[in-house]
Length: 172
Image 1 (cartoon, rainbow, N blue to C red):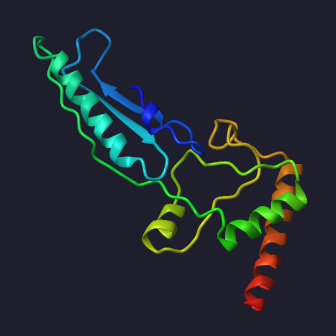
Image 2 (tube, helix red, strand yellow):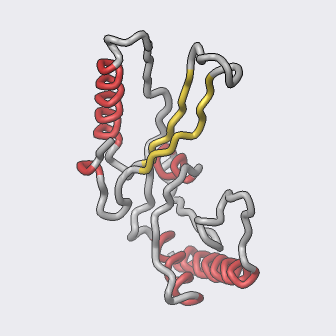
């Protein structure tokens, strides 16, 4: 599935993942059914294009099976819109300034997963950002870990951010 028209300058192209596959009862018989559940993660503001593309792909696949004995049903059944905190928001600025003071080499990056920050940003209009120590490559991996120096650095960043945030709120 090509989504070049939904590639975002900051977030890049949508990510796709087949998360579950279920079917069959044993290795010796043809399965009566098979189901796949997939996740697509995309940039804020691109859902309509993604939805159109997914529905077109499902429709084309169903048409390709019309002259076979395979039945197919596809549906888009769950949608959580992507969200972002504005880069100029005070929260983002205070956090990023704190990050840069502790680790000047660190860059802002987008988070390619689902998180509850979307509820604060979208539903409640409360700016929310995600921050964490360690590497996303290790997050939720079988051997997930954070090296101690990165854990300490993350704690320093959060402590500095909280102190700066409290001072900024007293001043305003």
